[in-house]
Amino acid sequence: MTDFYSIDDLLSEENRLIRQTVAEFTAKEIKPIIESFAQKAEFPQHLIRRFGDLGLLGITMPVEYGGTQADYISYGLVCQEIERGDSGMRSTLSVQHSLVMWPILHFGTSEQKNKFLPGLASGDLLGCFGLTEPDHGSNPAGMTTHFIEKEDYYVLNGAKTWISNAPLADLAVVWARNPNGRIQGLIVERGMEGFTTPEIKGKWSLRASATGELIFADVRIPKENLLPEGLGLSAPLKCLDQARYGIAWGAIGAAIDCYETAVQYASERIQFGKPIAGFQLTQKKLAEMLTEITKAQLVAWRLGVLMNEKRATTAQISLAKRNNVAMALQVARESRQILGGMGITGEFPIMRHLMNLESVVTYEGTHDIHLLILGAEITGIQAFK
Amino acid sequence: MKILVCISNVPDTTAKISFTDNDTKFNKTGVQFIIGPYDDYALARAVELKEQHGGTVTVLNVGESESDPQLRKALAIGADDAIRVNTEPTDSYFVAAQIAHIASQNSYDLILMGRESIDFNSGVVHGLVGEMLGIASYSPVMKLDITGNEAKFAREIDGGKEHLSAALPLVLGCQEPIAEWKIPNMRGIMTARTKSLAVVEPVSVDDSTVLEKYALPAPKGSCRMIPAEEAEQLIALLKTEAKVL
Image (cartoon, rainbow over all chains, first blue to last red; front, side):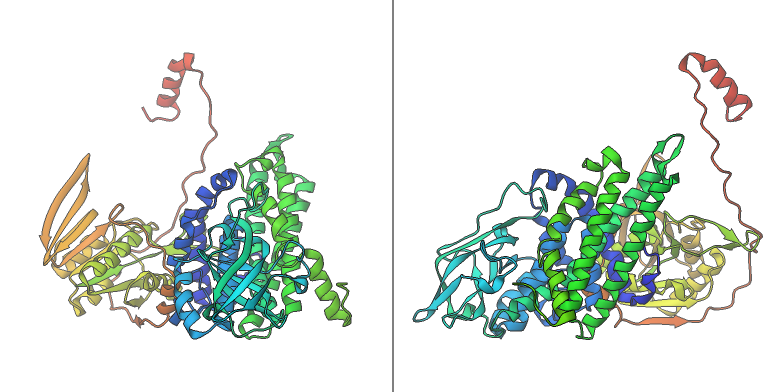
């Protein structure tokens, strides 16, 4: 495992055992099947229960709700090791943990926590998160999905898009305008009349992960499904902080898988009478990849410590997400070049990682939006509009 | 039922092996250690038997503190407590004497371990432990079920299997397919730190062997292709050069 600066020494014994365990799981249960599922554009649904059995879905959640109650470094390591297999599998996991369980835990009632969290932790339930709308991606404050109050229920109307897990989800945490015009969360359950989740087909990225829309046509939502805490856009943005943190670690996993594949291939591929690893241009690529992976690992580790201490800021998370995903994308592209024509085939994981990362660099705040978050942090002046 | 599982702390199967100090010490630098793969099967079956019949699983290692991560992993997989005999495991007799000493202080119904460790591969510790304790031992055991005070098990023999039954207590050296390796779940890992890992000092055992030096196998020679129509030359080379015929 690529760990040039012995970052393992900075981890606790539990952290190391969690990393090693999830690495074994990925090697045994994700890597052998994922290429075929991605080629067929199918979601390996059986893995949800396996994630639940292992305790990955509720990795930081309290034990009383079926969680593991591990620290944020553990969560990061889980994302890293799962994404060594596939970004789509990590996406499924981070949506469930950070965008479904986390808001229910922090903004929900005790009844909601008891009703939904244990099933989400075990993988009996699959959740999704509805924030992005067809006309409001980087600008969620402009959302138009809304609900009005009737006697003992709410009526929800609108649409969300680019929703990971949507086609198969049992429930959705949906952000919409309340009757006062403020953004608030609702738990929408599959089977509620007027609620549909059409799949987005024809993706060339995250092909083994199911993506879809959430359509709400006069959906009656029982009042007990309203998340009472967390009014305003800051509530969903706090969820995104959690998920973006996991992505910052996950991207390292994809990068390591590409880099290690490239090192092995370069050592074995003979051209002009010697392994291509012996040529300066290949060594330049490999040396730069290792340098960037090592820097990203240190950023992720430090951010994990700040998360554990509840000191990490949105801007710090933006820096890590932006840097690490761009790094992974660059490593994937360079690795693809080292593998030449073989790099585009399903015999090796690189092209799949590369295509997946084109989504990861865009979702949960685009590469450019994170730059503007940092710009606003530095200057105190918002440049979003 | 009280089960003792003995695990060894061995280099990962993909580790690059080298020696230092004039080939008298194994070079541990950069080597990842794991639970001995055969011991891991024994542990997995022990946890299954505990789930079926109740009781406890104690995991034991004769080794230094570098073995602790492997003991914690065994606790995460489902062992109830761990004991480490704090000493360098020098040879099979020494290790067996330490295991027998621990076992003699507790009445275990089953003492399970791998058929052999994958570092020194002597494959005799189970037999020695059985002899020292005066109880029967069998190896390699590839199937094991317990009914009351009786164990039914299958042993691999040349060209087939031998099905046996014997009264407990027993010492068994295990191998696949006795169980599938278990991956600990995250909750198991988090609770492992609350379980007891007792470190005890070794009993004195006279040295039976002294290590003189290690040697690596000779590097593989290059491959020479002999065309099929020159089979006679191939046979001659196998006789005169390779000296295998």
